[in-house]
Image (tube, rainbow, N blue to C red; front, side, top):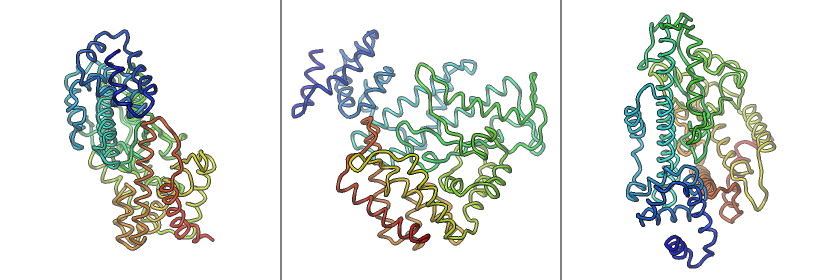
Length: 448
């Protein structure tokens, strides 16, 4: 404790040391019965210094370490703590970890997924806190981390279902396999838009392309369609079951056809007909941010075509604007919090949701004339394309981009501090005013 107090005082020369000491003690209280961790911090001054540094920077990180003390192992080698996996290596690293686990050890498979997420998330947060990563890179890493976990969750679920029921048989493809599942995961929202934050849930839709309903090739045979429903349920179970290391992700499935009333997994043709004939405008807005996450190439080709055909449908500009504005007002009424001094950066007028709705309106309005608008799912690159096609002026696109990055960066900082609202500043107010001006020009004035 004398060493801890000395290090806390050295970091708090100009501020009250008590809040930092309290955070550090939250971790020590959690590990009092774990002498191995106490010994680790006692014998490794570098690890102790980095613990205090992380506690000083973020109460969210403090809570993560206190809840999951195994994260202290990441502090032993500080150089590795700030050495992130390359974006394209998350899947391979996780796959290699799971190869060391016996296929029958379902519990250890779940724990391995959770340990991987916790340790990589801590490394991303550490790099974020120290300014090594800009905000867009933070979200890219968090999104790739989630993709790697989803990919392995589907493979693990398939292995469990195959062991129990055998493989499904489809009229056009024949018997399926783990390499050719006929099953895919579509990511919407923040995952689809490469914008995951700390603690973000996953907006997912599951689809398959199995034709027919023959029985699976197994001792405990079931109908092929039921196999895919059970597969989707198993994936959800892997992601959301709480173990000693928590759950992997909260999952929101409300964007599937017919919402919560729809099947957990639908045929890709049913998904297509729903999007073209029955979906509401707000569901087409959501499709602007949807992308293929995991699955077979034929399904990816089908999904990409469905998405493009839906987004490029001809639309009446004024009617579209009316629906988008009405949905935005409903969201604001039901979801907006905060006030003029404590800002809700997402739902407040001129906030993140307004920028997202502007880009979605533009994509739905103009993809028929500019097909390239449908290629992107992240708002920053959509704004670049809108300027390129002169649908926004360069200044408007720049102002929306600056506001969007500022708001998202601030929201990441708030998440690390376990805070919900931002304090009003001249900079935030200026960005909100710029967004409102552009909103009025392209949407509000169109329906006036």
